[in-house]
Figure 1 (cartoon, rainbow, N blue to C red):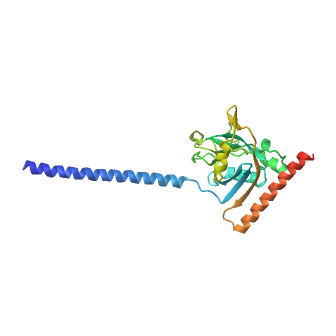
Figure 2: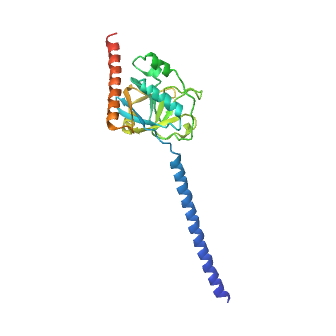
Length: 243
């Protein structure tokens, strides 16, 4: 009697063990799916506005996160609309880290008009979030004061978790990673904590458009921005050659 019972008990234990393993793996699978789903749901949604910086190494297009940093987005977009970034430049290119746009107050090669100056003097509060600093993210520059963000910002060239929660993320690059890779290969020099390109990486002009507008309206808008940017460059050359 003992031997048959022992055999049956062994089969029961084996079956229970298999069920336990199946249940455990199923739970792990569900936890993983839940974590991935949560991560995806936390990824901020881009607004419909796109901005294009036309550099001497190619175009870089980016969009905004209006629900993450609304004040920062409004400020940067107004600077773009006023043409403040035209003739500006990337003063810092640290491979695998950041490509940083200079403050328009000192980075432009063309003088600013009064309206541009007034907007460029403004700062925005630090809109820090849980969005991560990964390649392609746009992150505001600032001084030690968390509310000192002005017009300088960085395009991330790699993951930088040590910046998370310390600098305001307001958008990401949507096109032009090939241009960023070109910038990473340029010769640089070290100046203090900054790695800087040895030649000027100019933002020749900029324009913006709305992805939700009709194609004709978008084309007209782009053409207007390009013509305006061209006018700025012509004026810069006129002032340089015919003061």
